[in-house]
Length: 243
Image 1 (spheres, rainbow, N blue to C red):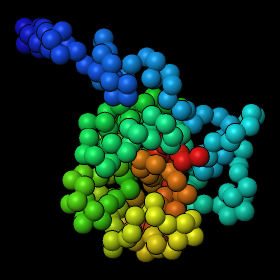
Image 2 (cartoon, one colour; image 1 turned 90 degrees about the horizontal axis):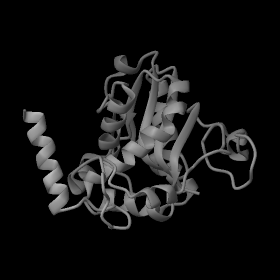
Image 3 (tube, rainbow, N blue to C red; image 1 turned 60 degrees about the vertical axis):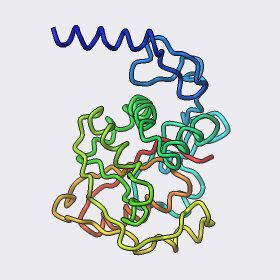
């Protein structure tokens, strides 16, 4: 009876206040949890093959997945990273509103799309744990939430993989990465992370979770400290990859 009443209440709410697409803002019949209309869903910029088989950066040409020149010249400390979408267009707008405009509810469409598109990659990797990239307490207080934790919580439920919410911590505040060059990003993050409970990651395969892969500096630094703590494999997933 309670389930029937909840269903009826939801139907009445949708009739009086129809849900709207998070992208084009048009009414979306049967919006479900995604709240993105079919046209906008099809228009999202996928980060599909061909991509670098290590860092996951999308290639412009056709063909099979293969390592990019940067990963060949300087292999990163993680084994493989993948993103669901390209960080452009509607994807960039959704992530920007999610992180900087306080619209934490956008973790749901972003997380569900990521869970669906990256499920084959995650199944092949078989990680033991998901670990979100941490924010420094000062940044966390300013933003009000850690977007990687919110995404990781949803991905954990979708993939049925345990989430170690505080597996990593920021040991010092750092300037925003978006303001820095590739070389500056790497220096900026050196020594900025630590493993909170080494026993929890010892001899485990940890999959890092973050919102955007830009240069990979953040994931690389996190992977290094995890390896030093005894983690035997580190991989990573993000919602988007900057072209």
